[in-house]
Length: 280
Ligand SMILES: C[S@@+](CC[C@H](N)C(=O)[O-])C[C@H]1O[C@@H](n2cnc3c(N)ncnc32)[C@H](O)[C@@H]1O
Image (tube, rainbow, N blue to C red; front, side, top):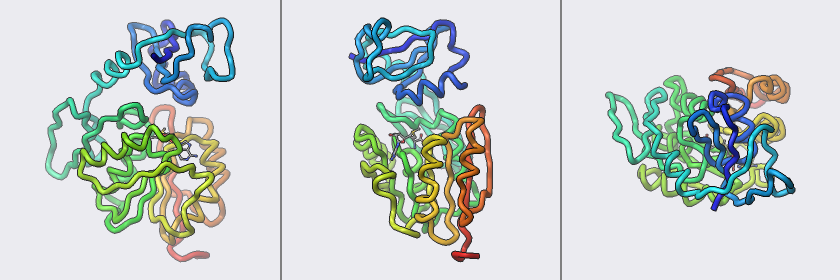
């Protein structure tokens, strides 16, 4: 069994700060049930959190109530409703849908399972658009996807020509899902369970880093990003909620240059670059 946190009459706020707070609290899926917004969590907290919240219960926005649910029903309903998403030249299609491709488009088949990354969230779309940007040539690049979730971004990088695409995620639940998605797409993208904070990449070992995390983590990881990038390298940082982009920008060290800011809805992507020659 799983737990659901139901917020009556709040469905319109799914894409805004309320939805963001529920994703930050660790929910696995956000569902619409009539006018209600329902956040599904993998753990079974019982009905008790309504009366006696404990440390194990995630901190969620007020105004809702906890329910015990059958996890499979909710997750199946969520994925059943997903359609294909087109971002630049990339079409992300759940395997139960058909994808109609135009010339030059690449399809990524994706079953996100319980991991984040269907291509529907603004932050994933921003990151995908950055990787698929015709001005960025991934051919021959070493790409690192920090917080790879379903594996979508690393798989996209591989399909877009990267020489090596590695996805790392601290959550072990993501590993079999990302690997299965790579197999589904005949992708050579590799995945590892790893905490970026504890095991940052070797210096100058990454040409393109993409990270869909959240603002505070980007601030904490910024120096490690700078060290990991090879000369001329770029990092695309998203998952930054509007209002927090200033803190991330302020953390950009002198060795990196902020080269792009993109916003979709409540979310930002910031792109930073390392000069082609260290010290240039
Ligand atoms: C918002 S999801 C992004 C998933 C996918 N890359 C996408 O863009 O749709 C963030 C992922 O980062 C992972 N994560 C959080 N902290 C991390 C860390 N310190 N090291 C590695 N992964 C981390 C989470 O487990 C989660 O799967």
